[in-house]
Amino acid sequence: MIMNILRRLFTIGKAEANSAVDKLEDPIKMTEQGIRDLKEDLDKALHALAEVKALSIRARNDIELFEDKSKDYEQKAILLLQQAQKGELSAEEADRLASEALVKKEENLKHLERSKSEKVKFDESIENMDGNIKRLRSQISQYENELRTLKARVKVSSATKNINKQMAQIDSSSTVSMLERMKEKVAQEEALAESYGEIANESRSVDDEINKALEGASASKAGDELAELKKKLGITPEGGNAE
Image 1 (tube, rainbow, N blue to C red):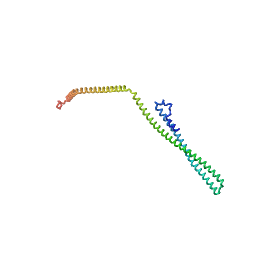
Image 2: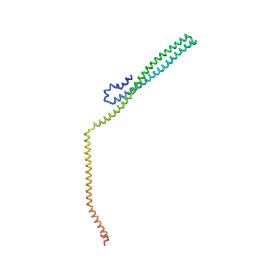
Image 3: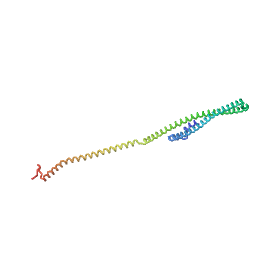
Image 4: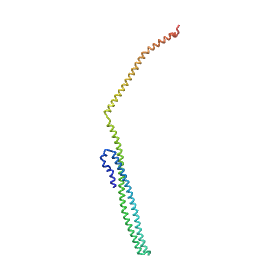
């Protein structure tokens, strides 16, 4: 039965195997359920092992008990015969009771042999069950490790698939065309900005020329106005007052 349990994980969902080939989620769920089933079987196996060990312990105790009883009945038979030798008990009564004691001894010896045989069988079962339980634990641990690896691979493959899908949806020709249009637009804006700068510089240059040309006229006019003002005030060129 235990060996059949070890194969259970590989038989789960056989009817749905074909439909689950392309779906990573289904194998994961199936594996998780298989591991849960194996753990339940492990608990049952541990419980059965405990019960068999209890039977082995009881058989061991019975062996000690029946061995002590057989020795005790043999000792009682000896004491009865010794009492007859001493005259404390009639020979007939001593023989009868001693025979009964020896019958009891034989009964306990049979029980003793039966208990020994049972204990051997129980111990063999314990050894086999213990080995199967160890293998079952090892299989569960292996499946859990493989499941963790499978889940990690699913995450990586899913992320890779999404990235590749996005990359596949990108139209490289339209992207290049869009970049070229953007470059052309930027170049046009840069040229326009440079043109406005040149116009602004040209406007400043004309103003500078006009102002420079008018500097001499302004100075001459200012000199004439100064002379006229001095004349009104009667100030002579030498610095004196006019008579």
